[in-house]
Length: 543
Image (cartoon, rainbow, N blue to C red; front, side, top):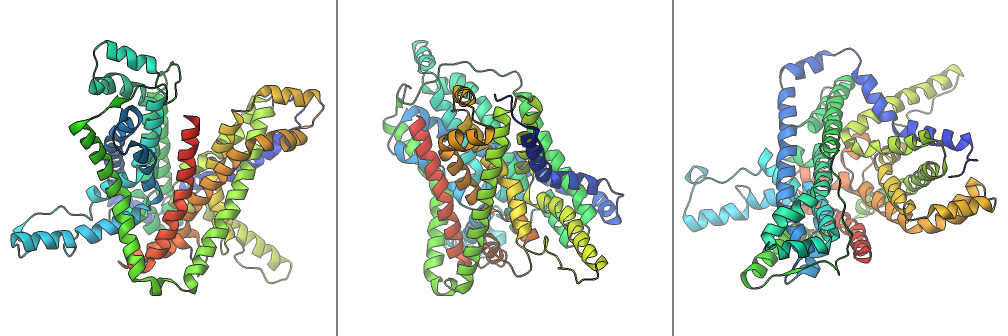
């Protein structure tokens, strides 16, 4: 620690935290205002349905994701079977696929007019829908399956890492005691991986609550769609803020419950890499089942939707390759670049203050600044629109007071609002990446720099930044991809006439014409593959 860190650094940290937490404060203030007739009407009619659907969706998505991800993670981490090396990284690919694109693809395949039901009717001679039963795709159950297919890699990644880090000596002990692979998984590996599974489930649950496009496409009313409809349909910002406050209560209650459930869990084991771990060699039927399970999972979650997107893009290439496509791609690109740079700078400053400051209170800004990621996009849009609208009016009132024509909506009517929103939502990713890199820098380097008379700014520039380069780059890369994919905040906050790739693709999905937006969807997917490949290589090097 550097005892000479000035109060100016602390002030900068608290200023950054104040700006990032501004939407949360704005939502709480707006929600505390007197109730309107719109919210009372929602409370008496459809609000219980919104809440129950949200909770049911969270439950089924988390349950489905953990049931399909945990076996795959254990097979890849602890067993040797054909294709294991490919599945180790390939099972991360579904994260790059937008959930609403997967929902459209499967709806097109499984709907009444789709090829699957058509083939069944021809094969069995069925003539009308009354002749047979087929599960309804556009339902809460269908939305749960689509989201579970896209979000299970969160649990897979954390569970695989936890299984790989488990001590080899414990596995040898379980073998000596006569435990087979199944007993070893159930009685040893799974209980030891519970903390990682809990974190993965909480991430899946937060992403489920934040999802707007999939539930909107499937016409499943949840709190996310309620905020959107209340704001744009009823024109009631106050009622939308109250619904947003309910969503925040659900999100933070879930995070608190997850931490409370793990409060007494402690895990002490000797870390071991994959080379020291025991791999169960699967042969015959067991090897076939392991390869088949992972192949089926990968095919359903990524390969099939991607092949269909490629087919759409090939047949509708001429309709998709136009000036608007390049314009929307450029819009997505430059906003993502700007946000990734700003988020990285904020992460560097906040984590530097947390590291070198002798005051424990200076740890608070970095923690507060990480809360933005917990805000769903629709909720974040409400929280940003309220203060920026007041700021726009204040600026125009000032111009009017000075006898000049006001500049108009310079904050809410420009791309500034999107950059501001994305920075608040995704700064937590950059902060976490920089924090993880800081943990690898020995405090002795700071002490040596202090004895050489380096001031805090020189320490950051000459010592820390060269050692943080990889972590900063990883954080910027992840923030860039998240900005490319973010839809709810972009839909609600985009200026008039502004489109990016995410909103462009969603419009075609809403109009049942994804074929015309398939090329843009492929760009989003391919860009999303970059951090996944980078992440997998990092994990392999650590192993």
